[in-house]
Length: 172
Ligand SMILES: [Zn+2]
Image 1: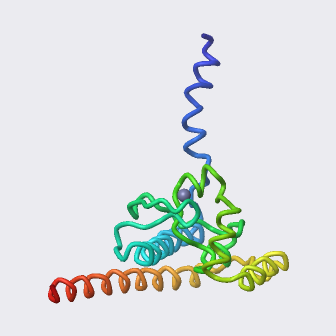
Image 2 (image 1 turned 90 degrees about the horizontal axis):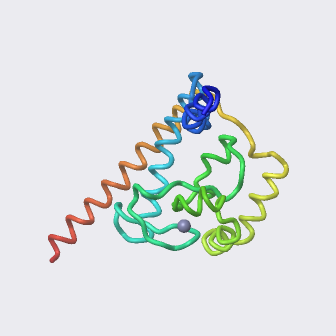
């Protein structure tokens, strides 16, 4: 094997690792923090809805049950603009296979959205997506306030759950 080939092989894993752009600017760093908070809120919300616990939920497209750590916040509409990225109605708990390997599993996601939000809401989302009305990026302070909001909402969901867990155990 030539040295060139060895170097090419050594480069390979690193290229894959860096495929996703790392947050560099303050805005990108803030967006990553907001995303962490938003994703946690979405998964907690959907786990509670699916199983009544904050530990397990169901993938919105294949319906399989997973621990919350194995679920992602998957999007209905494509695009990574903040206005779409952080839209609660367009993000739901989804497994890695459906979200990433099957590119969102669009036909099943459409069915799910029809049942959950109704066709009229979907039509508005699609129209707005075409109009670019919602395809906006947010400023750093806006993203920061969303991060705080979703952290509080996630805490609220967890608190609610532990309170009702307590009352259930008392009732027994
Ligand atoms: Zn799935």
